[in-house]
Length: 396
Ligand code: PHB
Image 1 (spheres, rainbow, N blue to C red):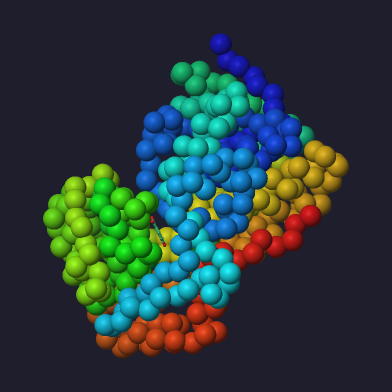
Image 2: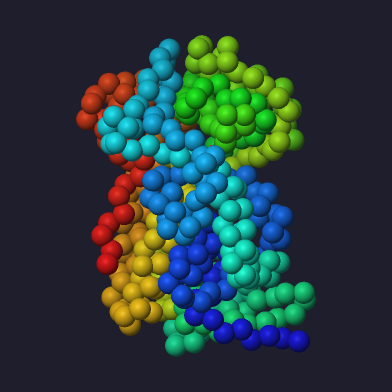
């Protein structure tokens, strides 16, 4: 039989944005429901990003879901950039006093799901939202499906945390949205393998054959990427082909360290940038990928989802605690300022490292930019500041 559920905040999507928001609101006694179209197994199996800014880690701690992250996460104080025949390290700690934490988004999601279930709060898996209705009224509704039946959630606010193809943004009439988009003519082919990483920190590589990235999930699990054509398919790549092409692009010192092994996962991610403005429509608030997609080069996607949630959780908490609506009114412009700040960095960093064409002039300019960026104290500081994450602006 069709159900009607009443709650304070209806959250669509159980990725990091939706889950983190549910925990932060929970801390303030605000009731939420989380709807997820996929199964728990599917959500916990998705391989995603792996670099947490301090602000993101802080929110996990505030949510009280930090034990495994703090025990198993690897603190990295810098990254290396390889270009020409050089490898230059940027020391985040020296320039900013801070580092980043290497901890898979997959692990973060698992922790957030488990903690919510342990607290006796529900996540409705395999419950796709079909539409968000009446979000300009006092009682917005989420229509969703479960076991072949239609149900509804009636709430005070809806948080659309359902990714770039989710129903939240699709529920908004096109003329009320301003979209910004940039599509790149290439993608990243990524492999995850149970092998020790080539280096104890990440290496970003500008190579004549195309970009490559050496990343990791732990001391025994590596994540590598190579730039590939947009039309390429995973089926075209054997494990051996991948390792061979990666090996070609590695700086010489790393070549000797490369340990190969069978894939745990291999996938292609197209590179694109997408922003939908504003991020608030009456009682409907977008957060994370539902509002913006970033090229992965600066490792910003997950961290922007977290900063949106920081602003949104503050705004909702101020509403319930003090009946304040001013933070809700400022949510969109405040979140978007940080989004555009990260886009600026991600696009610049993407342009610096990838092979766009065969023109040697363009490659020389990239090398000159990398030489300046790694050689100048001011430029290194600027890079470090952006990589470890711009501060959250005051929002209270
Ligand atoms: C990853 O480990 O998946 C990763 C790391 C850094 C990036 C992008 C992806 O910039």
